[in-house]
Image (tube, rainbow, N blue to C red; front, side):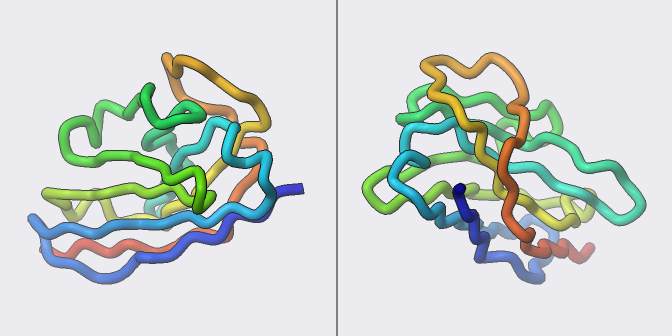
Length: 125
């Protein structure tokens, strides 16, 4: 079993930046595909970004491409989401997710076998 704990959410003005962190328990998590989803008010949960096991292959939703960057520090079992040029439409609860598989190249959204509890990101206009 893997536990995922997010941190780093908050309130930021449009155009600002935030960095989310996700700490994963369990040594095997460092080999799994990791990523982020979000759920805005009144919306379905949507995929944001994913990284292969070593961070060398990443995939992003079109809505965040060029603004968000996913990275990971495997010795620390931590995944990050650097969010720049934030927009009010980025307001959502952001969830860390893990797929119980080791992927060399990511070419699309991940499944989401395990989930964190979420962290709120609010972008004011």
